Amino acid sequence: MGPLSWSFRRGLAQALPEWEEEGLITPASAARLRARYGLGGEEEAEQANFAVYLLGALLIFAGLASFVAWNWAALPPAVKVALGVVAMVGTEGLGFWLAFIDGRRPGLGQAFIVLGALMFGANLSLVGQFLNLAPSMWGFVTWSIASAGLAWAVRSVPCAALAATTLFIALGGDEGFVLARSPLFEHLAWLLVLGWGRWWRSGALSVTGLVGGAALLTIAAGRTGGLDLDFGGAVQVPLAFAVTGLGLSLRMSEEGQGVLRVAWTVLVVWAFACGFGVVADEVASGNRDLPLLNFLLTMGPPVLVGVALGLGAPSNQQSIEAWVGMVIAVLLSGAAFTAGWALWVVAHICLAARVLWDLRRSLRTLDRRPFWSAMVLAASVIVARFLEVEVGLLFKSAAFIASGLGVLVAGYVFETQRRRAIYDA
Amino acid sequence: MTPKQVSFAGAVGLQLALLAAAPLTRIDALTAGTLVTLETAPVDPYDPLAGYYVTLGYAVEREAGRALDGYEGRLWLVVAADTPGWRYRRWSETRPSVGPDEAALPAVARSSRVRIEAASRLYISESVRFEIDEAMRAAKAPPLVDLSVGRLGSVIVRRLRVGRRVYGQ
Image 1 (cartoon, one colour):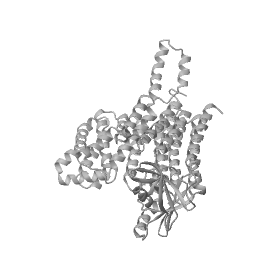
Image 2 (cartoon, helix red, strand yellow; image 1 turned 30 degrees about the horizontal axis):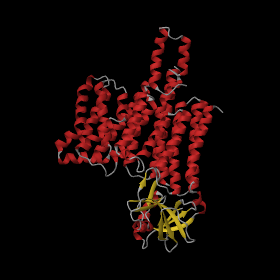
Image 3 (tube, chains in turn brown, red; image 1 turned 90 degrees about the vertical axis):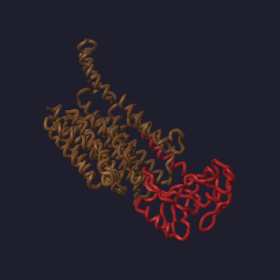
Image 4 (cartoon, rainbow over the protein chains, first blue to last red; image 1 turned 180 degrees about the vertical axis):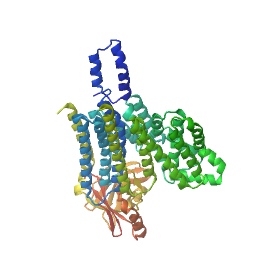
């Protein structure tokens, strides 16, 4: 099996027929190269799935972290640690078997191995909880060493990214280097991971970087009571979101028409921002005090989107999608004059519509990109809500784990159906 | 076994060794440490990875801080058995020998403030975090913390006692 670099394998798949034609390689050599790097068959599908499975693993880890934080008192500490260790070793063992022994689900297996590396961090926290130890630089260094060991053993790029990230966190903490304590440090670290993944291992590491970057900005934007919202703040959140992975993944999905693609991206960005209760309340209350000015500043883009879609919808080949977008833009704009909760509800209707529309299109056309867009958007909204809202940790844990399992199952079912439709037809 | 299987087994073994390292370095405090009780005034924050905890500060730290004369760096606090909590006796740059009713606690001094190592937190269940706040407000006497101090100088926080209520192990 070849490396997980999609750009390399895509380039090779395109180049092989030319090389054969020019006599640079024989047909037998071309066939061996195709088999070696899994071009155009089940292996290529599985490698492409890895990104979605990784998203599921990250959500499950968030659930496990919440479960550890819940600190269930019914079990003795030693039993808690033992359960955590058994779960970690079991998950990694299952992943290794799927990826390297059975071999039929390498993407899913690699995702389980990454989940095991993340569970090591949760277990480290469990040990710290048992000994009542405060987190320290050495805890993150330990996590980095363990992740690096796994990354080397199974050639896992996300594990290597985790090792680098935890080392960055160790360096940037109170006991780390002074220069690394700037708030931008984490963002720079994620940009480096994203750039590295895009350039080298674009698929899996790009998703890791995109989700992490979106999570960081979501945490910053959704912190209850900590959001100082003025015009700059109102624009900053959706603009920041627009340059994160969610904006990029939305642009990856084929909308057909350029205007429709941009319009829906703007709507989703605005809806994501208004999905935060603090933002929705500020926008709605601002419209009561300075109605025209505030409305132009905060809701101007959705209004323009509505106008563009209304003008283009009748002649647009994707007319149903355009009409739906226009209606949602009107609803968003109207809700901004009512109450924060109304704007919040309409924002979530917009996000749900986008997810469902992309899922429908992916099942109809068997195109992966809208499926990935839908999964990333749904996961981002779920993570944002649970970071924003104060709910019990046990409930939060269950919701994250259920979301992660849902992503894994949805990805598995979609790819299985896609494989059957394409290769068994 | 294939080389990859050996590498994978080695990586998992490394994880298990690293997880065992923290408890093993405190095995003396876990199994046979001296029980030291100190007066404290906790605060209740949250660690996203390990959960809710109370931050612990001790009366003996304040007393030692007043006696530092500008010293900064690692030191040892010597406390002596007393009721309800052990009392500050003296501090030392190097590990001192202690009497039968004394214990030496490793600490760090920075900006005239002393902090006992590995004794600043007690992790609590989400369900009791508000109860602790109420208990502390209603308590007539300072809360007490029981620490295990190993012969090699390692410290583990065992429990927080607020009135008749006990939190921790």
